[in-house]
Amino acid sequence: MNSSGAQVLGAMQQVRGLFRELSQMLLSADYLMGQAGWKPAFGTTTISEATYNVNRPNLWLPNFVFRIYDTNTHPELWGAIVVALSNELPEPPKALITEPLVHGLLLEYESKDKVPARLDAATYKLLFLHEAISGRTHDGQVTTMPWVSNDTCQAVKVSTWTVPMVEVTDSEVLKTRVIQGFVAAVQEK
Image 1: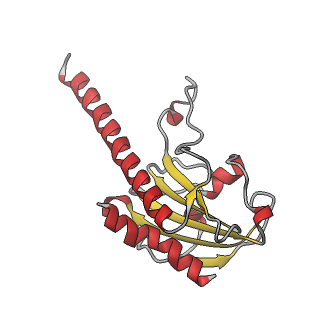
Image 2: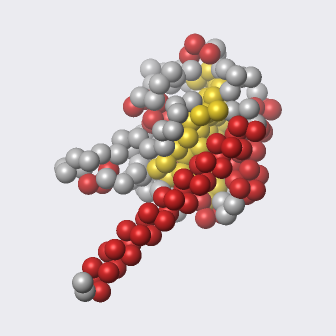
């Protein structure tokens, strides 16, 4: 094996290592969200729209990983934690991120009946909502605004916040910079 081959293998080991770290972050998020009364809404689902298709190599690795949550205390709410790993995100929006980001997202619906019951293409696109908001920041500040319901999303209000992934160095930072966003957004309701 030449040095270029060794570099490819090294790069693949780094990607696997990143995925192990992301798994630990999301499992920590599940635990911390559980302490706050939230549970995963779609089992162990973590990626979507990845493929084995030879014609779509850009989707062989996920561009993002996520966890979606709901809570019995507020059945009209639906939340997500999304780690954006690439600027090759679907439209809308065509996100132009310059580093991996951890997004928090809280959608409020008129009633429990309007909350998405399954993870479909329309629901999946909501995970990128933060990048569509003008004036967004990546400092963990919660931005809340009314949402105009459409065929894709029946929410009436959306809250979102983001921090750079490299700043989420342990469970305590995850709790204070990401999970607490859910607490703050629910208190604003």
